[in-house]
Length: 334
Ligand code: AHG
Ligand code: MN
Ligand code: MN
Ligand code: MN
Image 1 (cartoon, rainbow, N blue to C red):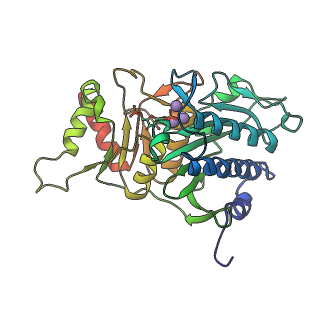
Image 2: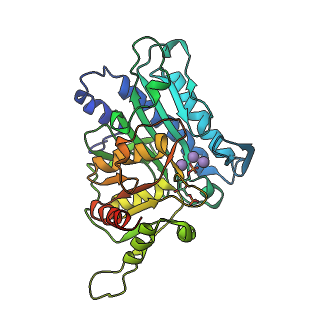
Image 3: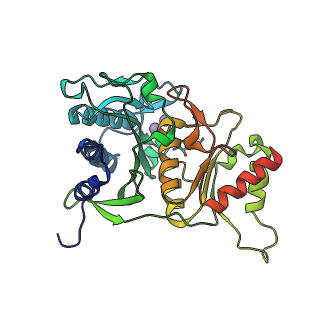
């Protein structure tokens, strides 16, 4: 396959960047890639198989779990269990952390925090959904990880990535040496390097926010939105609003085209809606590695010390110039 670099080849080529890893992280990323292909197969058939709609259960977040939430959750946990490189999984769909106690995983080095299916509200309407993952090294020396191993700052991540099940299926990840995107070629069942060394544009004109919450936004966010809806068109290009309702979809578009994604505090989410461990930290690591910025409007996301598994935070993430402008409004008005 002249000129094609598969995810597997790329991971092995880059393995030289890790002094401490003797292939474990490479195998862990491979395991996640495999599970993503299995989830992709069901996402692509959704509507033809009994995978749409509610599972009839609710998760610790108080959300109605969709069948695909549960299916994806099971697939990733099972791939991480059989892969043997992960000793604990934190997932949106389980109240507590999941110890992976298979014989091979006893001294596994890594912890994986995962949002198995992001954008669940879009599953039944055929709009892009995703998976988000974040990987830490176990800090405790003997045996499996403990809660202190899990509650590490985002700066401690060794890798983070997302899969977007959209018009094509892509896996985008970083191990701290830049961001690379791979597109699934279904004809060979391989993720192939399609977006090497991704960089978020310094500035942009796309702002992504659920304006249905406008009334309850912090004053600084309201001011930023009015700034985006520029009045005097002679001063600068008008902005455009794009909101998919899948964090992965909105941030992937902004990574490629430039833009800002905001999920501030709202009346129903006084601490923000998005979860620090498996949504905000991994997306912040990726966007920073692509030259962007991610904060809660004031504090850098990656510097936050997590206190509990499903902790939420507000998030402003994307093109540096746009996030910094929003932070100025937050500092001045909120
Ligand atoms: P999830 O489907 O994993 O629970 O995440 C949904 C999140 C995120 O993907 C999306 O950007 C946001 O919730 C949408 O929230 P609103 O519907 O409140 O705008
Ligand atoms: Mn959910
Ligand atoms: Mn999510
Ligand atoms: Mn989810």
